[in-house]
Image 1 (cartoon, rainbow, N blue to C red):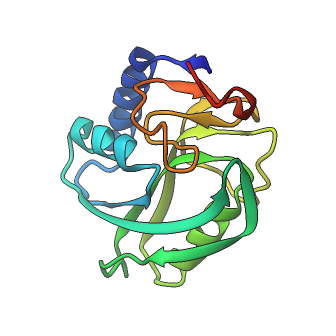
Image 2 (spheres, rainbow, N blue to C red):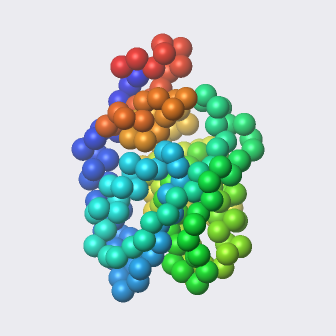
Length: 174
């Protein structure tokens, strides 16, 4: 595997994103909804860096097997909070094709939040097929498959502190 983004670069970017979000939501208490499993490390670090009050919840969606999207999003765990008339921030580890994000955004819009924004640590701009903007983007990355900092390959490699380009041919060894 090849290091793409170091632990220090991630730490710096998370602090920057938290400052932007805190500034934009001054005087408000947004609810951050993380997309499991990949976003849990990013969300934990982001929440700890926020200077505003917030609430958290999680949803679990599935669209990948191995390194490929199956083309269908499956809802495995729904949010438990009532988000009607709330300021909602979706927290995602990575937006690549945008399939999962489109599904999730439309689902939440149906609950009529007062505002809905999206923060993602990683964005694959060259493959994203979105008809809306991502409000907060950590890093734009190439279309390579990546692991680490919560991102996985078949539930493994989440524990890596940096983000690595994953090569399935070599088994993903460092």
